Amino acid sequence: MKSGRFWAWVVFVLGAAYFFIPLIATIEFSLRMRRGVYSLDAYKVVLGDSQFQATFMFSVVVAIFTILLGVLIVVPTAYWIRLRMPQIRPIVEFITLLPLVIPAIVIVFGYIRMYGSNSPLPFLATNPGANALLVIGYATLALPYMYRAVDTGLRTIDVRTLTEAAQILGAGWGTIISRVILPNVLIAVLSGAFLTFAIVIGEFTMASLLNRPAFGPYLQNLVANRAYEPAALSIIAFVITWGCMSLIQILSRFAPKSANRPN
Amino acid sequence: MAEPFLSIQHVRKSFGATTVVEDFNLDVAPGEFVSFLGPSGCGKTTVLRMVAGFEEPSAGKIVVSGKDITRLKPNQRNIGMVFQAYALFPNLTVAQNIGFGLKVAGMPRAAIDSRVAEMLDIIRLPQMADRYPYQLSGGQQQRIALARAIAPKPKLLLLDEPLSALDAKVRISLREEIRSIQKKLGITTIFVTHDQEEALSISDRIAVMYGGKAEQVGTPFEIYNRPATKFVANFVGTLNVLEGKVTDAASGKVQVNTQEVSLKGKLNGSKSGDTLSLALRPEAISLGRQPGHDTSLSGEIAEVHFLGSVIRVRVGIGGNTVSLDTFNNSATPPPVVGEKADISFSSGDMLVLH
Ligand SMILES: Nc1ncnc2c1ncn2[C@@H]1O[C@H](COP(=O)(O)OP(=O)(O)OP(=O)(O)O)[C@@H](O)[C@H]1O
Ligand SMILES: [Mg+2]
Image (tube, rainbow over all chains, first blue to last red; front, side, top):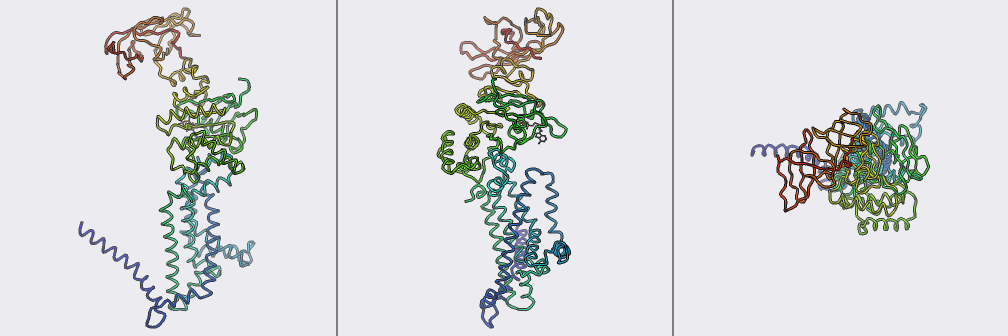
């Protein structure tokens, strides 16, 4: 018993060290831009850089569109499968898992071949087209997380009976989805949305190969050319990602109540 | 019936190769309260769902006020429905739930508010408007569900075992409440249940269903006292069944065990030598020979259960056992197991089951 607890602590300390030492080292390094004293100079430089602001805003906007596209695709699909076609659920689950198995680079090369300037669907010939393609690609990457979150949310309500209750009261599909289904899975949708946001903000492969001015490629470029700023930037990205994760945690703690009481 | 409000005509429903409802026919008069009563799996819910529009009949048609609605979508039928699992919208308050159908229909806000208040009064929960469903008891939720169903003034109300998730006391008070609201509003209603007491106590008529068919449709009095088939007789109420053998069809003589009873005029079509099932309600039988009872049989007391106000006695007559209830009387001790005893009844109360 005693020695079991001792080893448990050893493992815990080792794990914590593995996680925290690089983090602390990075933080420490990011504060050393000015000679001899700790300062926030690196952060000031990074946050003041117009490139940083532009690429970060670009990625935020892309993330928002990705979330909207994901919700529009996933909520009706997951709903319809629960309502009418439970037998095809394993197939759809498998499809939504594919982006975890197929590397993003494969998807991007597929896109470049399919939608290049000379193809019948020249998405990549224009900037808006390329941006749209990026959003579509990100929606694919986020699919496993979005689908799972929404499907779990739908499991907590009696989809079929609630649908029928709304139908017999005269509601059409639009009303049913917007007033009955979506409000009841809102928390699940939000947690899917934060995961999507975290993925999109840090993504490099797709953005870079599609040559988009996103945050991921900017980060990579900075790492290759500067010393202190990348460390500061990593910490900033880390804080954003962890912020999203904690928001999911907080929201899911409130989920059972707020599913019943959205305001 | 002058002109039925709802007419279900030759409706059949198959899921794949299995036929679940077969040639179902029923006419319901305006304002009538009809119960579907039957064992689990007999197709009650399926018929109700076809009336609501959630399932499409494989054959036959459903007519409401002379209009064929068989192919209409559920949201075009103007029908109210109450579900077994309440099915209140968890994200909406009680008032928003009740007003849902009105809002969908595009009613102005003020009119919705006053109609919702009126509904809350009818179900006697006026102070609950701002609660959420999870803050209510099962019985309260089901009353809200009822209010939500009738708020848009539907012509037809369907209830699928609305009381089966509630405890016994609430079940009884709520069924009476449903019935009185239904009467007050004059709304034509179909009520599905597998509880015979429920069906007998609140219905104008009952359709007893078995194997996807309506075995008998009639008033509770008819269903109970003149069951048309063996199934109905067995399913509704407690029934003692005795095996009898026709000894003389012309004069109506039937032998039960070794004793003879006379059932003149009730044997319709049976021949001498046929075996028959004869049924008697417990309340038609008395212990001992009673004035006014023209038939008696002798047997032996098999079981005695003292239940307080009544004593349930089981009497063995040859291979048959007959249950009957006597009132407890402090002056006479209950019968003793093993004693010889006679039972008597009026031959008019005996049902011949086919
Ligand atoms: N969607 C369906 N697919 C296949 N079979 C079905 C379907 N719905 C119902 N059934 C079958 O139809 C039969 C009748 O079902 P139904 O739900 O109408 O019974 P019920 O009388 O309402 O029973 P209960 O009292 O248990 O609610 C059952 O045997 C059921 O298995
Ligand atoms: Mg049922």
